[in-house]
Length: 453
Image (cartoon, rainbow, N blue to C red; front, side, top):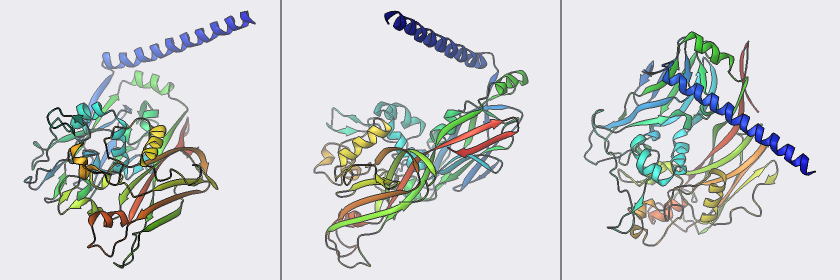
């Protein structure tokens, strides 16, 4: 028995050794492509561009594109910068992108709707030091916080880039498109010469100014972005890469649906305090295999996130906290969570998100409806309170029927002239749902096929 164990152990060691040798060879091959000049970097201008509307890039030519595509010069100018506006404090210049899609002719390879809300959530999955030292300059968000020895609370120690009236002076961001289109993380190369001869990237811009900057006093205008690409054009190298292309690629596409929670009042009439229950079928993920599911709560009326023209903190791009909320998801007739769900516990809800998506960079009061003296703990603590309250779980199931159950407690109020916090607690809410949906791209000598798993 001992001899068999020793033999199996040797087999395991040999397998691991062979794997590392293979990985090392592949790594050396990729490094050599850069060192010998086989890969060159190019900049693509949009083939079609309309400010504040859309940009389209054509990835054509007898070449192979590396999948690490990056959108550069992403930014805004303002008609007047007297209010010192900054890009959205959560998603930075990523707030500009409402929808993004990679297509080959009429065939959609990957896409994401309402992508800026999901991209904002992704900023929180980075370490605090990553937001402070990198994302503040790459995407121009304001999430990196550090305790100041002078004021003894969490602050932005590094300056936030202000929007300006000219393209030369305004902050311009760099967005890794792989963060928005996960297919590009599963594919190393995009063959525009044979496999995808009509490849193009479509970007649609957000039009709600309250999602784009910290102040809506002056109109904003998008900059014309460019696409940064690494390409291979040597026919011999291209031929070798084409022979090594995988026959099938699988990835999790980020798909979106939305559930509306009605306002807790009717035409300004008085409402007594009580529990509001919402239970709705979600049809956007039917007949698909869902991995993780994220819920992002936004006011149906984005004006609720403004004080006159000033946008409060991250505005309507974060996930607002509600009062005594209870989430549950019912999949194919069975509740995912035991009993009623997360049972009115904001920190338990945050822990569930961390279990599903990994560590989150956050701050005190970010997921609470209210907290006393938060200004003493966090800069602009009153406006930061309750801005980042997400719900997320692991589903890992084939969906035939998905039902979202959501309870909240609303406060007594007569009409919209009541206290601001009461109005916001009772306001209509859109719950944006982002599901990781399994898809495959199968390739053959006759073409390719994109399908759900």
